Image (cartoon, rainbow, N blue to C red; front, side, top):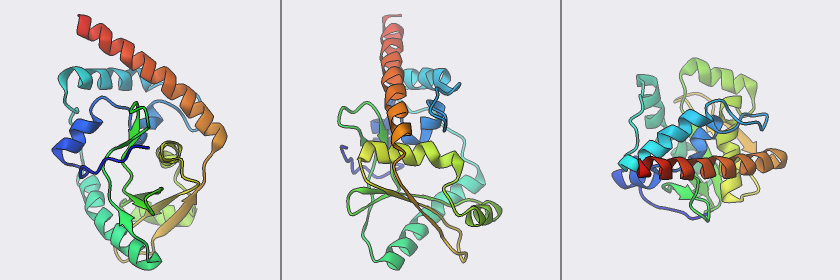
Length: 200
């Protein structure tokens, strides 16, 4: 994994991510069952367009999403103090060949991907009661493990003044094999589509 230190949300971070499949969107490439996602073609179109324009497409952020982003720093501090660990903040980290990447919310020990979510209160309570990785983040967390090569990752859900959900995520090797296969296919299709668009 190649670690990039451009601050997440910065202009350079967006530029680095432009046109590259990201773990936060791996659910658009592959389902939790390891089969191709029906959203893959549209995602491919978006990334090809970004490669041509050189710009990331704007995405809608609701008030709840913005609050979640604000809670990320607090969540990072709470987790670091509780476990007495150093949380390395990084930018967009790519596979060694640079074809796909991930922006972990932190790396513990420079290796272990740490992902946190700051959902609404009701959703956080739902996650606490579930005591496991929410299915909607399976591809993202497994993608981070696949790219980093770490032997485990950490997922947390945080809401101020509430207990923090902490889940140790271990690699799902059969899923990683399927993910690798679909990423190869997707990236090949993306390269061909981009070349087709450039030729006009």
